[in-house]
Length: 95
Image: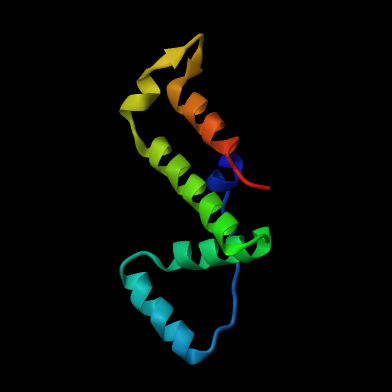
């Protein structure tokens, strides 16, 4: 999952005007790409809405951990604390 978060590839879609306008409003808040990406990932991951939302929450938790600069200064047996926590969260993913 962590590898997927690092490597984002652009993709284009055609939308009805109403949805395009709504996404343009989100783009002003810098939320449009995340919204579209999350929606597509939830649909393609399959499962039910709970499972999709749960897995999305895990991805968001990993992003939050990766943003904490101070956590990268700690390591145990040569493994960074951020890596240890990320790995533990990834194991919680519902398949």
